[in-house]
Length: 191
Image (cartoon, rainbow, N blue to C red; front, side):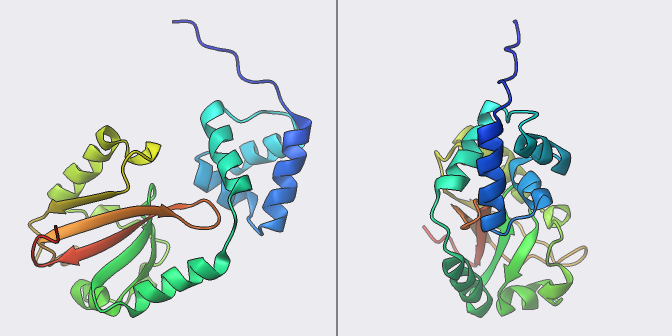
């Protein structure tokens, strides 16, 4: 199968991208992380030297046209932290912890501030790993599914206790375009 040539560079798009990123107070490295490229690639896009691949261009266009509401992001964070449920919020693809409730911290037997920005993937149970693998078939990253409930056996000890019997994942976007996953634990099937 013959590979299509890359799209031609677009200096006007690069200028608009740089302007939007600066107005949105998003660093090149942060945007690169969201889109899945290097900071140098974002720099080349902004200089008009290289064009984003079609899938990246789609993500960037969505981000640039989406109404940003940082107050809503802060409200979500506050609701997660103050929740009486075992709940935490992670970046969807990297699994980096953004915030967690006190009941979740109690379950983990550690303060979440020690884990903020760290990927929680290494703590996944086999059931969590299977559920993660199923997301592709569900169309999770193509916006065809935005929630998933599954049963897990949990874990009593290291590397991190997990007492949930059922887990609900809910996917949505923050105002900067970051896909996040709200993870809620239940003692019984929430459906």
